[in-house]
Image (cartoon, rainbow, N blue to C red; front, side):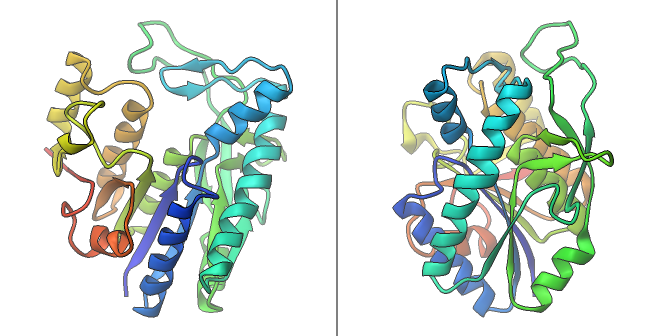
Length: 272
Protein backbone atom coordinates (compact mmCIF):
# COMPACT_ATOMS: atom_id res chain seq x y z
CA UNK A 1 0.00 0.00 0.00
CA UNK A 2 1.30 3.43 -0.98
CA UNK A 3 0.37 6.82 0.43
CA UNK A 4 -0.18 9.27 -2.41
CA UNK A 5 -0.86 13.02 -2.35
CA UNK A 6 -2.33 14.46 -5.55
CA UNK A 7 -2.29 18.24 -6.04
CA UNK A 8 -4.82 19.54 -8.58
CA UNK A 9 -4.51 23.05 -9.99
CA UNK A 10 -7.62 25.17 -10.31
CA UNK A 11 -7.27 25.11 -14.10
CA UNK A 12 -7.90 21.33 -13.99
CA UNK A 13 -10.84 21.25 -11.57
CA UNK A 14 -14.22 21.04 -13.26
CA UNK A 15 -12.80 20.04 -16.67
CA UNK A 16 -12.91 16.76 -18.61
CA UNK A 17 -9.26 16.27 -17.63
CA UNK A 18 -10.42 16.09 -14.01
CA UNK A 19 -12.58 13.14 -15.03
CA UNK A 20 -9.47 11.27 -16.20
CA UNK A 21 -7.76 12.11 -12.90
CA UNK A 22 -10.78 10.89 -10.95
CA UNK A 23 -10.83 7.57 -12.81
CA UNK A 24 -7.13 7.06 -12.16
CA UNK A 25 -7.66 7.85 -8.47
CA UNK A 26 -10.35 5.19 -8.37
CA UNK A 27 -7.87 2.73 -9.90
CA UNK A 28 -5.26 3.64 -7.29
CA UNK A 29 -7.83 3.07 -4.53
CA UNK A 30 -8.75 -0.31 -6.03
CA UNK A 31 -5.05 -1.20 -5.91
CA UNK A 32 -5.21 -0.60 -2.15
CA UNK A 33 -3.43 2.77 -1.98
CA UNK A 34 -4.31 5.69 0.29
CA UNK A 35 -4.96 8.89 -1.66
CA UNK A 36 -5.36 12.46 -0.43
CA UNK A 37 -6.12 15.39 -2.74
CA UNK A 38 -5.10 19.03 -2.33
CA UNK A 39 -6.44 21.62 -4.77
CA UNK A 40 -5.93 25.26 -5.58
CA UNK A 41 -8.27 27.63 -7.36
CA UNK A 42 -6.23 30.52 -8.71
CA UNK A 43 -8.08 30.93 -12.03
CA UNK A 44 -11.48 30.82 -10.33
CA UNK A 45 -10.38 33.34 -7.69
CA UNK A 46 -8.98 35.69 -10.32
CA UNK A 47 -12.19 35.48 -12.33
CA UNK A 48 -14.30 36.24 -9.25
CA UNK A 49 -12.04 39.16 -8.32
CA UNK A 50 -12.59 40.60 -11.78
CA UNK A 51 -16.36 40.30 -11.43
CA UNK A 52 -16.17 42.03 -8.05
CA UNK A 53 -13.92 44.80 -9.41
CA UNK A 54 -10.95 43.79 -7.25
CA UNK A 55 -7.34 43.95 -8.37
CA UNK A 56 -5.33 40.72 -8.46
CA UNK A 57 -1.83 41.40 -7.12
CA UNK A 58 0.85 38.78 -7.73
CA UNK A 59 4.37 38.87 -6.28
CA UNK A 60 6.92 36.31 -7.55
CA UNK A 61 4.08 34.04 -8.65
CA UNK A 62 2.17 34.29 -5.36
CA UNK A 63 -1.09 36.08 -4.64
CA UNK A 64 -1.16 39.08 -2.28
CA UNK A 65 -4.08 38.46 0.09
CA UNK A 66 -5.85 41.43 1.66
CA UNK A 67 -9.13 40.86 3.59
CA UNK A 68 -11.24 41.23 0.42
CA UNK A 69 -9.09 38.73 -1.45
CA UNK A 70 -9.37 36.25 1.42
CA UNK A 71 -13.16 36.42 1.11
CA UNK A 72 -12.81 35.65 -2.59
CA UNK A 73 -10.62 32.65 -1.78
CA UNK A 74 -13.26 31.32 0.61
CA UNK A 75 -15.97 31.61 -2.03
CA UNK A 76 -13.93 30.33 -4.97
CA UNK A 77 -11.54 27.77 -3.49
CA UNK A 78 -13.23 26.33 -0.39
CA UNK A 79 -16.60 26.72 -2.17
CA UNK A 80 -16.87 26.27 -5.93
CA UNK A 81 -13.64 24.41 -6.65
CA UNK A 82 -13.96 22.05 -3.69
CA UNK A 83 -17.51 21.14 -4.71
CA UNK A 84 -16.51 20.69 -8.36
CA UNK A 85 -13.63 18.36 -7.49
CA UNK A 86 -15.73 16.27 -5.10
CA UNK A 87 -18.52 16.05 -7.69
CA UNK A 88 -16.14 14.83 -10.42
CA UNK A 89 -14.77 12.23 -7.99
CA UNK A 90 -18.27 11.09 -7.11
CA UNK A 91 -19.12 10.63 -10.79
CA UNK A 92 -16.12 8.28 -11.03
CA UNK A 93 -17.24 6.28 -8.00
CA UNK A 94 -14.85 7.92 -5.52
CA UNK A 95 -16.18 9.24 -2.20
CA UNK A 96 -14.36 12.52 -1.64
CA UNK A 97 -14.82 14.56 1.54
CA UNK A 98 -14.31 18.31 1.09
CA UNK A 99 -12.18 19.99 3.77
CA UNK A 100 -10.42 23.29 4.49
CA UNK A 101 -8.19 24.50 7.31
CA UNK A 102 -11.07 25.19 9.69
CA UNK A 103 -12.53 21.68 9.12
CA UNK A 104 -11.34 19.92 12.25
CA UNK A 105 -8.24 22.13 11.98
CA UNK A 106 -7.01 19.76 9.28
CA UNK A 107 -4.51 22.40 8.05
CA UNK A 108 -2.90 24.23 10.99
CA UNK A 109 -1.32 27.51 9.90
CA UNK A 110 0.20 30.73 11.16
CA UNK A 111 0.48 34.04 9.37
CA UNK A 112 3.63 34.36 7.30
CA UNK A 113 5.98 37.18 8.32
CA UNK A 114 7.58 39.33 5.60
CA UNK A 115 10.42 37.48 3.89
CA UNK A 116 12.75 37.73 0.93
CA UNK A 117 11.33 35.81 -2.03
CA UNK A 118 13.10 34.29 -5.01
CA UNK A 119 12.72 36.54 -8.04
CA UNK A 120 11.27 39.49 -6.07
CA UNK A 121 14.40 41.47 -5.21
CA UNK A 122 16.36 41.85 -1.95
CA UNK A 123 13.65 43.36 0.28
CA UNK A 124 11.28 41.31 2.49
CA UNK A 125 7.76 40.96 1.04
CA UNK A 126 4.53 40.97 3.10
CA UNK A 127 1.89 38.87 1.29
CA UNK A 128 -0.93 39.84 3.68
CA UNK A 129 -3.27 37.15 5.04
CA UNK A 130 -1.08 34.33 3.79
CA UNK A 131 -0.16 31.43 6.00
CA UNK A 132 2.64 28.96 6.54
CA UNK A 133 1.70 25.38 7.36
CA UNK A 134 2.39 24.43 10.98
CA UNK A 135 0.86 20.96 10.90
CA UNK A 136 -2.05 18.75 9.92
CA UNK A 137 -4.75 16.79 11.70
CA UNK A 138 -3.36 13.46 10.53
CA UNK A 139 -5.67 11.34 12.75
CA UNK A 140 -8.66 12.88 10.94
CA UNK A 141 -7.18 11.90 7.57
CA UNK A 142 -6.49 8.42 8.93
CA UNK A 143 -10.10 8.03 10.04
CA UNK A 144 -11.36 9.03 6.59
CA UNK A 145 -9.02 6.61 4.82
CA UNK A 146 -10.06 3.80 7.17
CA UNK A 147 -13.69 4.34 6.16
CA UNK A 148 -12.95 4.42 2.44
CA UNK A 149 -13.10 8.19 1.88
CA UNK A 150 -10.67 10.43 0.00
CA UNK A 151 -9.84 13.70 1.80
CA UNK A 152 -10.10 16.70 -0.56
CA UNK A 153 -8.29 19.68 0.98
CA UNK A 154 -8.81 23.24 -0.23
CA UNK A 155 -5.65 25.35 0.16
CA UNK A 156 -6.91 27.47 3.06
CA UNK A 157 -5.33 27.02 6.47
CA UNK A 158 -6.45 28.33 9.84
CA UNK A 159 -4.48 29.55 12.83
CA UNK A 160 -5.17 28.63 16.45
CA UNK A 161 -7.27 31.78 16.95
CA UNK A 162 -9.62 30.84 14.11
CA UNK A 163 -8.19 33.18 11.46
CA UNK A 164 -8.37 31.61 7.98
CA UNK A 165 -5.23 32.11 5.90
CA UNK A 166 -4.58 31.72 2.20
CA UNK A 167 -1.82 29.23 1.38
CA UNK A 168 -0.33 28.29 -1.96
CA UNK A 169 -1.82 24.94 -2.95
CA UNK A 170 1.56 23.49 -3.89
CA UNK A 171 2.82 24.43 -0.44
CA UNK A 172 -0.05 22.60 1.27
CA UNK A 173 0.43 19.53 -0.92
CA UNK A 174 4.20 19.48 -0.42
CA UNK A 175 3.96 19.91 3.35
CA UNK A 176 1.26 17.23 3.58
CA UNK A 177 3.37 14.80 1.56
CA UNK A 178 6.28 15.44 3.90
CA UNK A 179 4.14 15.02 7.03
CA UNK A 180 2.77 11.73 5.68
CA UNK A 181 6.17 10.62 4.35
CA UNK A 182 4.21 9.92 1.19
CA UNK A 183 5.42 7.48 -1.40
CA UNK A 184 4.47 9.97 -4.11
CA UNK A 185 3.42 13.58 -4.47
CA UNK A 186 1.91 14.21 -7.90
CA UNK A 187 1.34 17.83 -8.96
CA UNK A 188 -1.29 17.95 -11.73
CA UNK A 189 -1.02 21.23 -13.66
CA UNK A 190 -1.89 22.66 -17.07
CA UNK A 191 1.70 22.09 -18.27
CA UNK A 192 3.03 18.61 -19.18
CA UNK A 193 5.89 19.01 -16.70
CA UNK A 194 8.91 21.29 -16.57
CA UNK A 195 9.70 22.52 -20.08
CA UNK A 196 12.95 23.70 -21.64
CA UNK A 197 10.81 26.03 -23.76
CA UNK A 198 7.48 27.13 -22.22
CA UNK A 199 6.06 27.54 -25.74
CA UNK A 200 6.92 23.97 -26.74
CA UNK A 201 5.05 21.19 -24.87
CA UNK A 202 7.38 18.72 -26.52
CA UNK A 203 10.39 20.11 -24.62
CA UNK A 204 9.45 18.23 -21.45
CA UNK A 205 12.31 17.51 -19.05
CA UNK A 206 11.80 13.96 -17.66
CA UNK A 207 14.10 14.55 -14.65
CA UNK A 208 15.45 17.71 -13.01
CA UNK A 209 17.88 18.21 -10.13
CA UNK A 210 17.93 21.11 -7.68
CA UNK A 211 21.10 22.52 -9.24
CA UNK A 212 19.46 22.44 -12.68
CA UNK A 213 16.45 24.25 -11.22
CA UNK A 214 18.71 26.97 -9.80
CA UNK A 215 20.43 27.39 -13.14
CA UNK A 216 17.04 27.60 -14.88
CA UNK A 217 15.87 30.42 -12.57
CA UNK A 218 19.11 32.33 -13.11
CA UNK A 219 18.86 31.99 -16.90
CA UNK A 220 15.15 32.88 -16.97
CA UNK A 221 14.16 29.51 -18.43
CA UNK A 222 12.12 28.81 -15.27
CA UNK A 223 9.97 31.73 -14.14
CA UNK A 224 6.65 32.88 -12.65
CA UNK A 225 4.51 30.35 -10.81
CA UNK A 226 6.83 27.44 -11.67
CA UNK A 227 9.49 28.87 -9.29
CA UNK A 228 7.52 28.45 -6.02
CA UNK A 229 6.10 25.15 -7.30
CA UNK A 230 9.59 23.69 -7.74
CA UNK A 231 10.99 25.32 -4.58
CA UNK A 232 8.31 23.69 -2.44
CA UNK A 233 8.66 20.37 -4.27
CA UNK A 234 12.41 20.12 -3.69
CA UNK A 235 11.87 20.94 -0.01
CA UNK A 236 9.43 18.06 0.37
CA UNK A 237 12.09 15.60 -0.80
CA UNK A 238 14.18 16.76 2.16
CA UNK A 239 11.18 16.37 4.47
CA UNK A 240 10.67 12.69 3.74
CA UNK A 241 8.49 12.23 0.63
CA UNK A 242 9.99 9.62 -1.67
CA UNK A 243 8.93 10.98 -5.04
CA UNK A 244 7.68 14.24 -6.54
CA UNK A 245 6.29 14.34 -10.08
CA UNK A 246 4.86 17.32 -11.99
CA UNK A 247 2.38 16.24 -14.67
CA UNK A 248 -0.27 17.77 -16.92
CA UNK A 249 -2.50 17.17 -19.94
CA UNK A 250 -3.26 13.73 -18.56
CA UNK A 251 -4.59 10.87 -20.63
CA UNK A 252 -6.33 7.93 -18.94
CA UNK A 253 -3.77 5.92 -16.97
CA UNK A 254 -1.15 8.68 -16.82
CA UNK A 255 -1.65 9.36 -13.12
CA UNK A 256 -1.01 5.70 -12.31
CA UNK A 257 2.09 5.75 -14.52
CA UNK A 258 3.35 8.87 -12.73
CA UNK A 259 3.14 6.98 -9.44
CA UNK A 260 4.47 3.63 -10.62
CA UNK A 261 7.02 4.79 -13.24
CA UNK A 262 8.36 8.24 -12.18
CA UNK A 263 9.76 10.11 -15.18
CA UNK A 264 7.63 8.30 -17.78
CA UNK A 265 5.05 11.08 -17.48
CA UNK A 266 5.76 14.71 -16.63
CA UNK A 267 8.93 15.65 -14.72
CA UNK A 268 10.28 13.81 -11.72
CA UNK A 269 12.33 15.87 -9.24
CA UNK A 270 15.66 14.48 -8.10
CA UNK A 271 17.89 15.69 -5.27
CA UNK A 272 21.26 16.96 -6.43
